[in-house]
Length: 215
Image 1 (cartoon, rainbow, N blue to C red):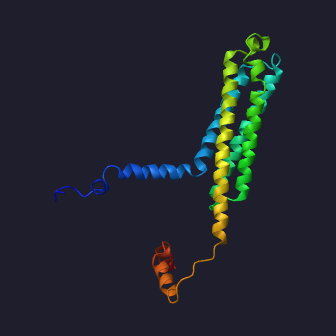
Image 2 (tube, helix red, strand yellow):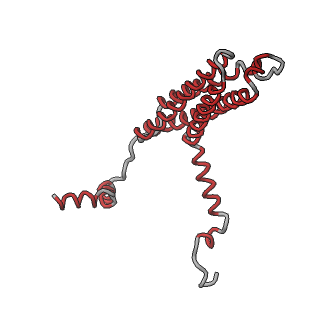
């Protein structure tokens, strides 16, 4: 290598080192439950918007059953959104690893999405996929497509939240196992130097010193 060549990371590991590190970060990100919960929040918002749009075109007297199902679906979508936001807020407040309570919350969200998907799917074959019936002509193809999209979104959220629940359970079990481990034991005579090193590397040491100077 020429002496004039700049010393960069590409000259050390070659062009393939940086993409591998980015790939590892991406895989580590998807090994946690938060991307899946965020995706489910987007699906819940999509169902809220689609449900409100469908309700604005449906006639309650003409199709009371479909109108009632759409109202239930919007209420459930609002519940999904609130429950998922609560999970994220709980993680921010706790500032710790997930617990079994978080696993139970995740399973509850899975059940809510499953109820929404079942409610949207149960009448689809009779109302929207039989073009010879009067119901199909009353509802219309556009509303049927919207209901189908909401049902597909709900079932996709069920699968996504199952993955998030499994990852939350694994993280909670790992935290429980780590909590059972005994505290670290320093070799004889090493505790004092280690504590001095921790004191020197305390990020709040300079702040405390300044506060003492002002006092």
